[in-house]
Length: 582
Image (tube, rainbow, N blue to C red):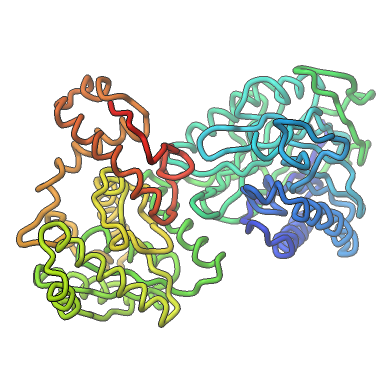
């Protein structure tokens, strides 16, 4: 059987930074060549970053992407890498498309190209366009209608893009019909919990359907609310894993594969689902036999809590650094949410770039400031205390507020103080709200919702406690100081806006609340279905009513890392003005 050394480059791209993304492709292509690769691949839309959203509808950006692709082909040749075929994702358009109703303006394509000898040897576009969850690809792209096959060193390699594997039909069965020896899919598949298990089973299934070795190359890094976890996978035609890349890490998986020889006559014609074969021969003759050096490695999977924590770190780091910021500011209350947020920030950016401020009021307990100070001591972040009592007294003297207005004034004063420090010193503010609070509206607009990013926005309160315990345990196992004070974990959660206040004054216990929310928010179950799962019907009605009436608050909350199947934001889009109640 012919041999082929494949380099799968699991890299991070920045949306819109065509020059830097091209530099990264060139850098990793050079590394692939140094490893002796015969074919190098890069993720979906690696040249433009993903997702580009409405940039796809801007003709100037589409043309810039096309120019960058041609320039990259020339740079690869000029750098002595022209003989290495490089597969890279980019943004293209359909040249022959005529404007028509229901089609995105300019007929953009989520495309990829094979670069060889300074030329664009082959281009193709994603066939299946996802239109669920965070995906809006019907809004942005027109589908590809070919099965691209490139012959490299006597092996026919069929090419696909992400959703082409997730949907039945299309390029996978067409690959079998065409008799390809390898199916290579490039992907920008966002992270969510437990998706790695689902992804592995998907790749196994598609390899068996395609009847050939299948390589699933994924992106890593972060973009706005999305995190990409890498976890590239290669399986043989029977679905057995040959190699698996680390999670949340840039790198290159180099693999020697024994693959079936291409047929004497290249595949042609129209195959499954009406796909037309587009075949290009780059090198027809197989390589002389060589000793395989890269037979496959399997990176160990992270456990569930470490995986989620890693995703939160990567998402926060990407948001801060890719937007040109250097440091972050966190209001430290001594509670679990701000403690976990600060720990994440220290891990993502380094403690020297994290600034914490305690803002006690007359209702703050003594341990609020001491626990915040202890967190600062353990992590090494910058810390100061600025009491809000004088500001609060001045407002109260002028307005004579009572009840909820008096309570929320404290939160809004803290928000104003944080934004003032942000403006003065150049840090961006991190909002520490969790998914449970956002779901039921247990946050103050223009108060604790102030911030440029919400690192734990998609983390339920019960998971906040679990992640804090995991982070401390992981530190202890490495012989390090656990970052989060035990008192912040043990004490009852409280906003401390009135004497002896605790969250359970107005909310169910968090394990019960989160179980109801998970069914209603994440799974879209109605009130009857939630109650049928064993919850009190009156409690269910109350919680669902709180969720429904808080939509206007959530719409004004900053973006934050998505880790669940349905985070608040693009995943879950409900009208603010909405009279429907369960």
